[in-house]
Amino acid sequence: MTAVLETQNLSLQFGGVNALSDLSVPIERGALHAIIGPNGAGKTSFFNCLTGYYRPTSGVVRFEGTEITGLNAAKVAALGIRRTFQNIRVFPKMSVLENVLAGGHLRATSNLFAITFAGPRFRHTERQLRDEALASLEFVGLVEQANNLAGDLPYGMRKRMELARVLIAQPVVVLLDEPAAGVSSVERAELSSVIRRVHELGTCVVMIEHDVDLVMEIASEVTVLDNGRVIASGRPQDVRTNPDVIRAYMGRQRQ
Ligand SMILES: Nc1ncnc2c1ncn2[C@@H]1O[C@H](COP(=O)(O)OP(=O)(O)O)[C@@H](O)[C@H]1O
Ligand SMILES: [Mg+2]
Image (cartoon, rainbow, N blue to C red; front, side, top):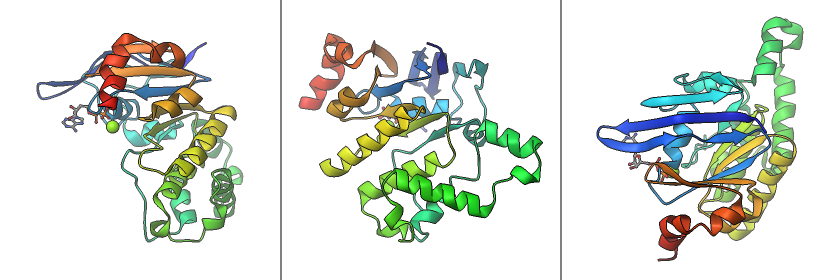
């Protein structure tokens, strides 16, 4: 297996605080890779370093074997590395369809290549983008809501809309920051089925998730962070029984 996205000795400091310490994490091409750990463990900071929102203090980020450390967020997105945010980002006064279209302006590398070198004939027309946005909405089960105001959607559906916005870019890797946090169990089932299908269709998925049962059900690989360090990694069933993990994460969760 080869890593599509990986960090080597990645560290991030804020003042004197070590948010991330020496993280070497390979994300394999075919993985549905879950990142878990208690609040403040560094999970979102890790995503921020992978996606160009934070510049690591030291260490390296590689995509497809090429170093991308320090590239800004727009450039990282244009490579086909797309993310959602822990705190939902929605344009409430725009329709669901328009929200999804907002994710389509930056295409993955292969498409950028086509646009740049194959000439205007291959440019995506507004019509094509619209069709793709509708296809993304269909994929997440929201096509009926396409013309509704995004602000009127229930929370769980907004989470699915964010997924559609990421998928329209045909990403190579998607990073989902707590995609099922705060949603009902019905919505959680919907979201997990969509995430699973994204993965089955060949997109590498990296997912921060608090719901251990969900992680155990769908992840192929789990990395556990605590205090900015990797304390365990491996297959879900192995990680679940790791005493360090039980102590750091699951133990604390039961309190
Ligand atoms: N922009 C920032 N400025 C200062 N400290 C930060 C910033 N972002 C994250 N941190 C700190 O880094 C640590 C990890 O936070 P975070 O990555 O959000 O954890 P998690 O997502 O696992 O809950 C925390 O101690 C947090 O306070
Ligand atoms: Mg977080």
